[in-house]
Amino acid sequence: MKKASIKSEDYQKYYQQLILKRIGISGQKKIFRAKVLVIGAGGLGCPLILYLAYSGIGNLGIADHDKIELSNLSRQILFTKKDIGKYKVLVSKKIIKRINRKINIKVFKQKVDKKNIKKIAKNYEIICDGTDNFKSRFLINDYCMKNKKILISSAINKFDGQLFTFNFKRKTPCFRCFIPKAPNEELNCESDGIMTTLAGIAGSLQANEVIKSVLNIRNSLNGNIMIFNALNSNFRKVKLLKNPNCKNNHLHV
Ligand SMILES: [Zn+2]
Image (cartoon, rainbow, N blue to C red; front, side, top):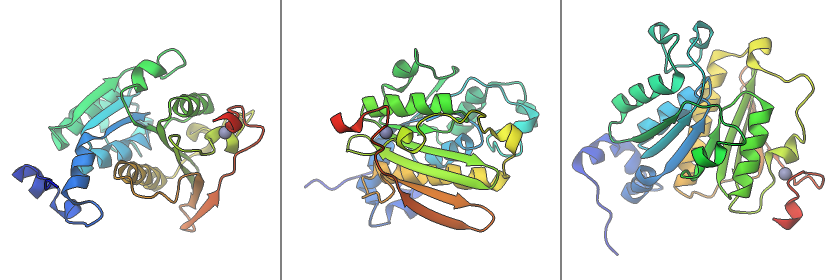
């Protein structure tokens, strides 16, 4: 078998990661080849995008239609005050290129909806949901399930976070099995509040799930939810069961 090789600069840059037996040069090359889409460049998306770029992810898409506001700056760590009024995706691209000039980055200055999701997501294998509303979450879940993508999703509120990995290439429950329909009064971080460090923890955990999926490391989170609380540092994994009443009808998948 041919031994995997890597450019000298990359070898030095990713040395600490690629000397790990579970990763190695071949794993690092898988990371270079990976195609990951991040939907939402907010509190979750910022740390997620940063860690993906620092890990060496080779192909990154970012979709977000929002402009940067002062109230974002307490947790959206790609942005500073001089960026207020600019599009999040454009500022993100500029910063990410500085961190990893080899990255193939494509930005979508659009709100992901029923009409455009196929076009935006089709070239990516792993989709990360960092949106803040149930309409987008359901749309992304249904798209990923139908198209057998890997969905890595996180949600945060106050001091609590949730993390999901759904590998729809295999039989797995989906987000709708957990939450069949949006609560009447949708939870959102503007009305409920959110702890700054919680966004960093959740976004970093999402990035970690991406790397594990790229490396094809047996994922014990697949089909489970990780529920964590930033105040009591409690992390627990809960098995997610297929809901017989799920709209996505898992019996036929
Ligand atoms: Zn389901």
